[in-house]
Image 1 (cartoon, rainbow, N blue to C red):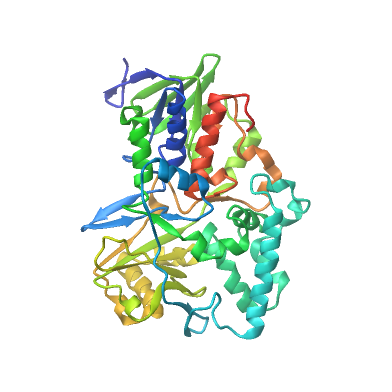
Image 2: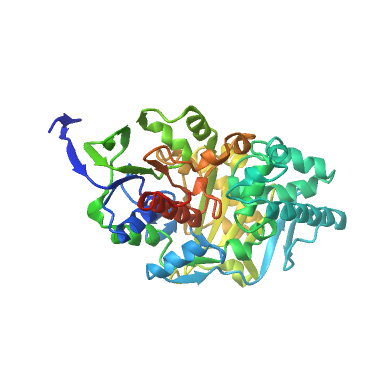
Length: 462
């Protein structure tokens, strides 16, 4: 063996090497193992799970990454049952809270807050148009829509502003896709990208229905899904702290090199976000269009905030914990109290430009600004949590943002089916390239299982 970085180079052979131990990579490994295929899973982090992550801090279990389950997420629901995990419903009893552009606070039990009648009418009309358009789009092949090129050439904000002169209606509808899902300013992605996001969840109206999208959670934490998957795969097949540096393809198969490790296999599955693939040197290089397509996908930015309180005081006030304020630093919150927690927990989200502004502050200033925003919805009791926690995905080397990546304007129709195409024995799997379940855990499972199928049955349809 040759010394590499002060340690011996380990060499192993297997059938398939999988780069990335997130849900997509582990789902692929799990399905391949069920078919008797040997795998080696290489993960740069010191843990499995990828963007599904929980931290234990001061005795508080915090689901830092993906955590919710929607009723239409069939693959996630099936996997949770297969792994023997339990689910529980999100608390949602009581009134929701809306904060308008003037700081006015309104409690309501209706689907939409009591805005001026003309604005409500425009909101409903925009939602209906977006719902109809999104249901025309196939999330797996959106480029096949007869107006795909037109929809891909205009930004989401540009399209919305052409539909109505009611600025309040535009501001109300925009965050359902921008801050709430793609976590980017609406001028940075196309209408077609917005429609794909909505289509992947069953349509724009379903995407905007929080009782559907944020329906359930896993008892004990969503991180149990990748943990149980890792157990099924076999921890001896998973190498943590192994940052893959190169992939070499030859007539003999693939040679994957990582920190202190070489793996020879017949095929490789890259289960990473598109924006991370360029960290790996690939020889021979990927075809130029495939390489450029991957460069068009960039991460959004969101700060996920957990505030733990001694009691769920908002319930005592007759509030559900669900809030919405398109002009607020924290544009939405939810009751995130776990069944075994004696107090109450709120989770809030700070996205795109607001997240940029918050990262410009030091930690103390940021905490104070975020809690003041939460207090706008719930009153001064929200200012003094027993414990406070912020996610920091933008600074995590092997993630670089949240929730997921989305393509630049014009990229969907420019590159079409290259988004999921294999290159010889190199296959790709992650939620960012999913159709159904796009950027969600369900999509990661679907893409992992798809990649496993391509490897185990090369003649099957992609």
